[in-house]
Image (cartoon, rainbow, N blue to C red; front, side, top):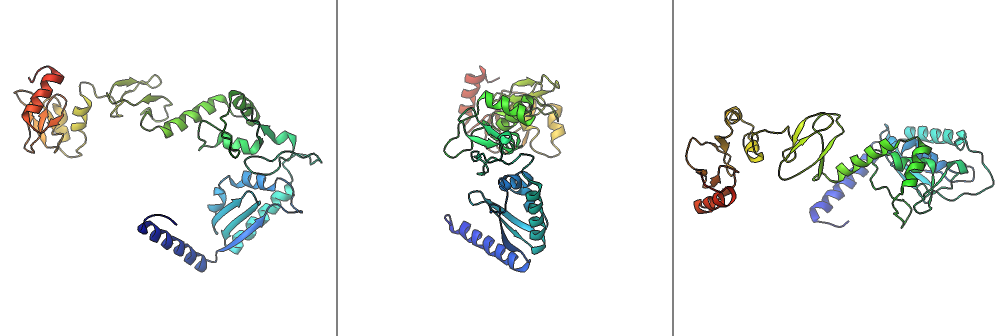
Length: 321
């Protein structure tokens, strides 16, 4: 292990705790060999199809604390109670007895799938990418293509490839796995939003599929689907007649002063430095707060000296009144 002493000590404690749990919970390690002379070809692919690429359906079961798959050696390893292991072994034997998913076995040999590393069992289950020519089982490419956690742009998973899918791959896949281009577009947009939280957000209305671009200016965005107006900086319903700074100054405190501030937001604001409430009844737009801040009442920027504040008012707002 590499890292700080604190992190290494914490890791050691977690490992020791795991071993202690194994010792006192009747959990044992078991290996299930998926590639044997008495096993049909493609058994590992069927196991992955049933339990998921990360075997998440196994690890959520009672009596199973962990599971991993060695795709090169075709070995399924589980940490489980003897009872849970016996049930799993019976399930895999049932998968084996069910056969190869409807494909007739033949003497013809097919290439190995880039995802599950097993030989594609028949021509009907073979899919070849247009972008690079690599081969997949239809079920394996379907998982990569339709997974809720798919990362776009989709690329080939073959070792040292990573070629992006081309449009022909998408149209052919949609047809073969019964997945619409509309679903594909929505999944791609969802992935983009997740990867760019500082650039784009979903509309405020629940279940509305519209998105908007984030901006530092806080412009008004009118949703073309549900009609709500949104501030692209504050990410709330647009605050008419209030700048973003004014809106935030009266909504971030979380105390009983909010109704008083909101009643006359042009004359009542909070100091941007210490948040004390201020009411301006007359005078110029330079406000001296007891905390020492010299505040521009127009945009709520604050300065260390009155001269700096007056200079800002003259330069940015044309006057200090």
